[in-house]
Length: 278
Image (tube, rainbow, N blue to C red; front, side):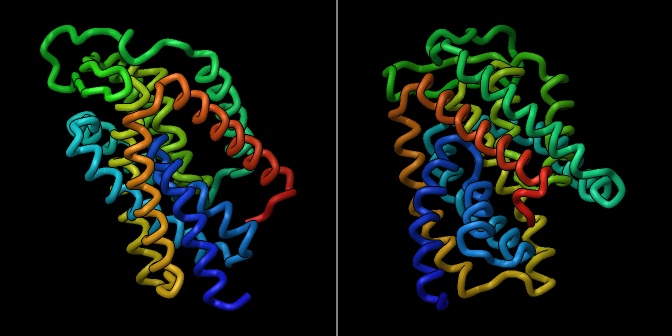
């Protein structure tokens, strides 16, 4: 396949991946890497590099819109990102000595369990806990779907920070990106409304990906001919996704995320079993 058909396919799929990634706080990269490896058969290191570019592009576009709409909890993002980045660095070193297959099986099971938990959760955003106390990490945002201001308290911050550390480590080991783990942690463990969790995660994943992308770029693994359509498609999709998030029902978002989590859990188990290789 020539460079132009490949670039067009990446651009078109990037719109889809960017939309879903921005809506769910995944960054789009986790979808792109599956497409690049399985559909286009792009070499693994180049696929990972393009996936990181996709995450940065999605986070830049979606993050700016969410910050403008005041859906992103920036203070909480900075706190959790400290633990996530630390875990990601540690995970990169651990990947050299730990049996990755065991981690992948464990993560696949966790994703399936989280998927079931999120699918069964039925509480709407407007029914969330009101802010209590004066913690600077509490947040609020205007929900266009319910036409109401949603205020929420941050619960289990220490547990959420520890889970973010683990999420970063697992992300560094298995290379699927942190958003697919961060959003359920914030929503289920820390009791943050799913829309705020997705917006905050979307900001965080770009910060993490930027550091890794520099390494790939310095080693000449970023294909600039494919990076351009990747970024363009992802950014268009991310803008669409930010608009859809504001108008979507929370329960629908949770169920879509549940399906995505189950999908990646299935992919990880297939990868561990040798059915998928990258």
